[in-house]
Amino acid sequence: MAGSPRFLTLADVAEVLNTSSAQVYALVRRGELPAIKIGGRGQWRVESEKLEEFISHMYDQTRTFVDEHPYVEAERD
Figure 1 (cartoon, rainbow, N blue to C red):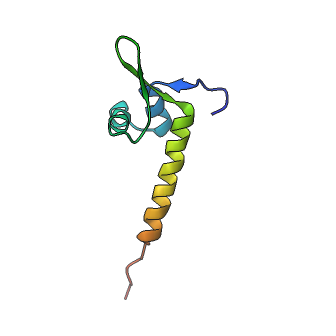
Figure 2 (cartoon, one colour):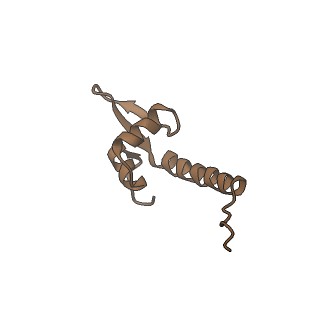
């Protein structure tokens, strides 16, 4: 993510992942996506590098799932 800020808001992350802020918040709260809480109001921030690591990890998980659950078309008569 060259030229982008080091830290992203949950809304920024949601835009990158094309999902909702609520889904990103759930990923953070479950510990799947590392984040920090800053400021008096406790705003969440995700480091760009951690987001890229998360995306890479999800590709690996998906590859494993596909390998373990091959797509098989139903036989046609």
